[in-house]
Length: 521
Image 1: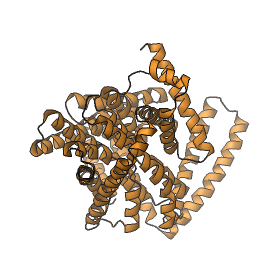
Image 2: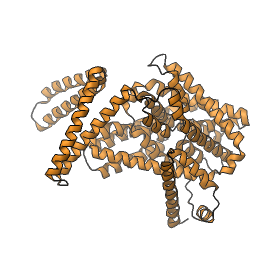
Image 3: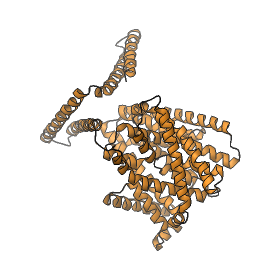
Image 4: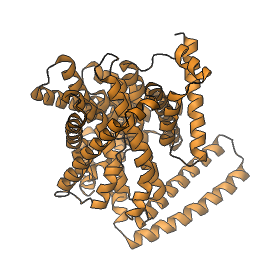
């Protein structure tokens, strides 16, 4: 394998991904669905040029090291960047239950069901259960936006997917180590799990906070995006070096940057560039993973093993149903209730994707039953993305959850306000740098002012009908103002304008206001 042939192979994969994306857009098919079908087609083609590419130019990109270290961190980081911590905190009880106990319950149910159904060794069946327990609802969340589904339902689905990745990977690693060593200890497993998760979270929080502080001091999109790329991989590698959870570290670092660095230390222009970069990175990595797995698992193998794959699908759905209906009912006892209709969506919207494929691919070539695990994983992923992904929309309509309600109208109006505000800021920069002339600036400025006034009137009307809508924004603003006040006091001390004693009193008052604002949330 030469560098030239590796680049050639990569180019062919990107060409295939681009063609699949074009076809998906033309036929209004979710891209992940098209990727699964494209991967199956590529794995089954026997055209001379395709055979030549497969056999002579194909690099060995499916080793455990490449899959876990090259592919996994960017997928995890991109998914965690846009998670709102405040919304996550409000729904923490059901999300944590589903992402921890839910993964364990689904792993046990799936593993024992497969062991009983097809005679797979119990330890191997449980390993498959851990591989397939992580959810990846990219297509579902896109459909949620299109149909304007309630924000809380989307947060529960996205939050569970974000956190259960780490649980699934740690559980997978514990079971894999037990199989390879022949010694599975429940006590040691629990201790390793807690140490791995907590340690990984601390590593991710520390590195994410450090990166956020650095972004506050610079305003160069290219540099800041590069820093996030370094953070995505370094958080994974540092945690991995200390035998902690690299997955948890990467997720927490992404959440930290998304909620601290991006909101407080980046300009709107930089944030937009950041989201675009990571969406593209996710597009490329997802494309590569799906197309590479399509070369490993060929369609005739799935067809010949259709009965086994169907049993695996039923086992996975059974494990998912037990965890969702059982644990959400438990969380309803001490937190805001999640209706049974929503539970149906959480169950059916728990799709499986790139992470499950990456974990299956990470098994070494001489691992017992690797071929069967790979086929079952791809079969379940294909079913969940194609069947569940294409039917989640009709299910939402059937359950009456797709109507645009007042909350969604309010959210749309506020997003449009933020967008107009960003345009006004950008227009000022264009005038300052001479990109636009004064007459053009005046015309565009007047148009944006008219849009801003209309939106302000609309939002004010919604506030008057429901004063509670402003509560969250009010408390956030109070906390930000208190933080700004503390920063100005600290700057005054450094400049010698006031004494440290006077500053201490002022800082105490600012702290009290910040605490009061936080408790009112």
